[in-house]
Length: 437
Image (cartoon, rainbow, N blue to C red):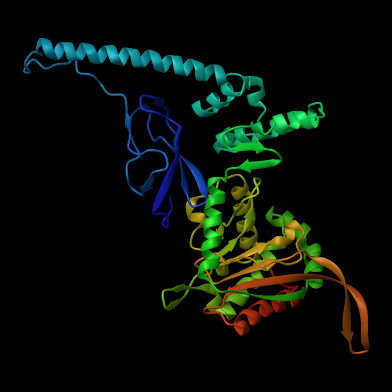
């Protein structure tokens, strides 16, 4: 699970005691912080015992389940002449074992036949959980095959199916004929149960928070209670940076097969500024300040369900622009398809978030504990600006962005926090147009 992961929570058993399991077939879903992942079987066999229940916290190295694999059953013909003949009691036990083995073999064949029927059209494998949900929701195999899977090898996961069902419900609702209700009808609709998580009471909709939303809520509340948040803002002229990117982005893509976004450009400036102000790349441990040697930059990434996750670019100061671009694109893509490894959201030393993706001009981000700073990047806008020249000042159109820096005033004073974000701005405004990649 990664060096920094010490424990995980069991969120869902996909197999029960007595179920057969194939090689690499998912057995149980687990969660570590914000990452959900499947644990797959390393053998073929039958689940004999689950060592933990759902919602139990399991330490790294502990046994999750016992799986019985195929083994030879001793028979009379295989016995050695020097070995004493088995007693009638032993023969009876062997007979019972053979009967059980025969029954299990028949059950396995039936399961394999059902699995074959569900996969023979397209060759896709559907887990028992997915097939169970599909059957419950009345999804035929033809419809199931059209749903895009985000799992390993494009496998259809439970999350894919649930998202599809939500989309289908929305589509069916929007296509349903409208009905006008009079006041008497409205009074009779005081409470309508939709499902276990969503209910309507009058005009209010009550939605149970997801596990990730609960974790984020606790993390943000804890940060506000722990750190003394202070903000500094600065406006940056990124016209030259914009023009440089426009000039090189096509050749960059042809050479590296990667899209050059503004994110790795901003990261380059942040990393340089962190070298100049190492206290921002630190944390507080009791009454001691810890200055981190490695610069591990976390980048807040929006997911399709509206949640945020923060994958971490480890040793970002060791990467050039090509390396940063590849790391950014890879982590962002795998974050959105729920394919991050638990170790890839750990050990961040500083975080930035691009709120400009949502059209925001500026913001006041909450520090990602135990870090002491976070930088929010607003939307790049065309603005009228006063341009100073030796021949006088004039007004021109420039491309500008506002940087919002939140920092922990317990150890970062206003001067350091303000000078740090000013240094980031200077690196962006004086972008090296000869920067190799």
